[in-house]
Image 1: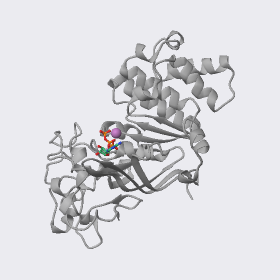
Image 2: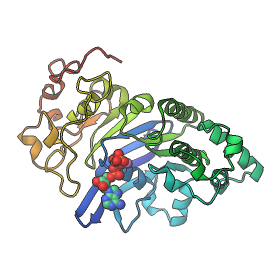
Image 3: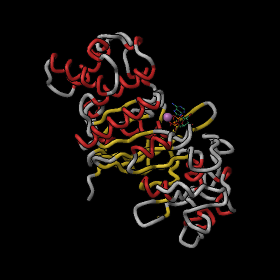
Image 4: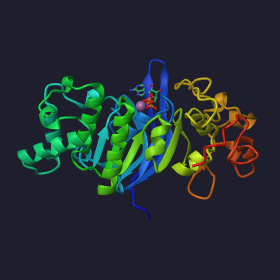
Length: 347
Ligand SMILES: Nc1ncnc2c1ncn2[C@@H]1O[C@H](COP(=O)(O)OP(=O)(O)OP(=O)(O)O)[C@@H](O)[C@H]1O
Ligand code: NI
């Protein structure tokens, strides 16, 4: 048994809209262990945010219909009472939302809000909570935290609000941090600082992190493991190092080819994500896949086949037991493929 903190099994989330039923998340499974950073990656609309918000059942229910099983520290979240859920959120699970505006209340100072978050789940005195709030603001990189603490949210830039929201999520020393694009509005220097902070806190408190991003550069910096999502499905998951070394799913390969210094293309993947109310049969990615054959166009999303030695899995027929993965990987299986990956960057 590993130290599994979060376990997500066969998660589904759908929304009824005027255009039809959107299957935003369609059978997603993964784990996050203590002290581990798992990145959810994929293009816009792939279901990352809905997955992250389903963890603490924040997807507002009648609108979103959530199924499957989420266990936190061995306990099924669906069986928790509203009170238990409330104490989980902002307590043992900190959540940084994709939209930081939503996390901050415009009528209270940021200091008041961070202190609330600290005191809600602990018995710190006002003075101690204020000192800790200043320390948190300082650590997330808000200059002059001692005076900024009495400012209101509208006095902060978008990037600063994102950092204030992160400080709030960290206020209760969570066991699990769910962070949805927490560095998206930040310049490169501040982004590095935040990633380093998360890394420090993780070593200090053995915190598990579920980190949502579409930026593979960020993934390379912080992930231990990666879950690649596309159109509500997991395309591939496994160890970050192995995945960057030998991406297996054609979608993962295409994403990595867009990363500066790796592929030659460095352009967005051709085509666009499928209509979420009417996804294609077979592999969701086949309409954009250079390796799609007849098998790829029928049935459901392919099973998660093992690839490599560890627990890496890929949902692609070319990795099935009878299949020939060199169709995707190229003859050198790993270095060089027909799209002309430059073999220069070995990590
Ligand atoms: N409340 C909702 N009602 C209807 N559809 C929704 C709702 N929330 C999300 N969706 C749809 O679910 C799909 C997945 O959305 P989600 O926000 O999880 O994507 P994402 O991977 O986080 O994208 P991004 O990178 O843009 O944040 C999209 O098609 C989106 O339009
Ligand atoms: Ni999102």
